[in-house]
Length: 191
Ligand code: AMP
Figure 1: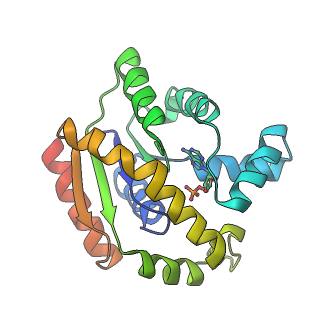
Figure 2 (figure 1 turned 90 degrees about the vertical axis):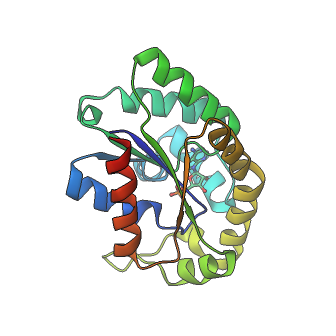
Figure 3 (figure 1 turned 30 degrees about the vertical axis):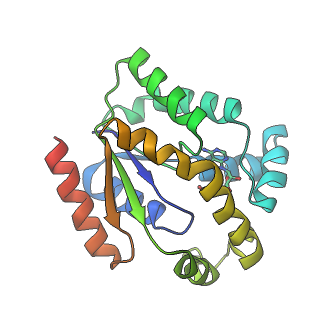
């Protein structure tokens, strides 16, 4: 079972991906986490990612497409994966379909977590990791920039998935466990 979780920053994609990883053994593929690991390693890619993330801007499509193509081919993704943070542009969505077709990998569901903007700013202002650390790009100014980028560059991919009847919408404002149960139902019905 391979799925995409879509939604603006703070919609709960990461939380739900982690839940699915724990309960169903699917692998969470978070492009944001992959980029943060590059930043931590001090690589050239990490330096570029740091400057883009600080501004809330997207990394170039070509880099992200290459990164995801390599990642989904790895052995730990064979039991299924959850894309969390990819695709984020129409170019990425089309490239993903092409690479999945080429590799003969199915995409079973595209799930959109819908939430309202003001709730997101509030949620992200409070968000912190289990160790108490906070993401630098969760401050309100960068959050607003990330939401704008989402509306302008990522939301246009929704008609792409809707047009091919693959998009499932969920109310992401519900409690975490309720959203999780709704995702379970969608996944089970796609089996
Ligand atoms: P996230 O953790 O998914 O919120 O991603 C954090 C940041 O990483 C984003 O604001 C972008 O700067 C960058 N990023 C993550 N995924 C992508 C992607 N698929 N395309 C372009 N930039 C990305």
